Length: 192
Picture (cartoon, rainbow, N blue to C red):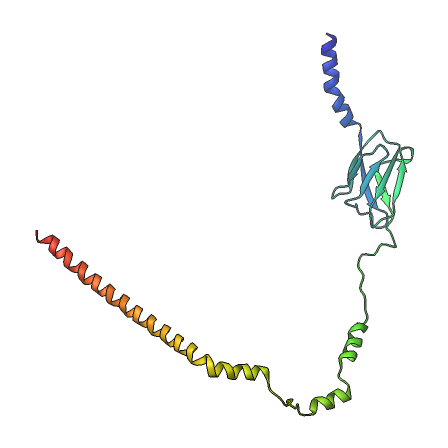
């Protein structure tokens, strides 16, 4: 019998914990509009957030409750000060929502002035460019290539091209020959 009473008490205990909650609504003091996503922290370590309609369920077993939101002043309420279900928060006048900066990029102007050619540089650019006298190493290499290797490289490329053409023709003739040979075999197989 004592065991049965203990089971019934264990079943009813979670429901008493659920019933021991209080529903609060967090509202903007100026516009009287509910505030969503307000962090609600109790002194016993529980933390919850308000829903889209500004409501939040808090346990009855708290002594102090804190309301935190980046756009509003932080507020804490003692349980003895709580009369009703509405908590008003004051907007934070120092909160910045958007920052627009007007001005000019002085760095770009300075770089343009630094990179702007001087009058002496403009005059030097107008003067004709003189090719230095002497032997050009690249020209010398090109001359040696023309005299020694160019003819061999061109002959090799010409032979390679001709060989590809010959192989293509051979494959074409082989294909024709195979088609003629296959054409004769079926006739021979039909006669016997």
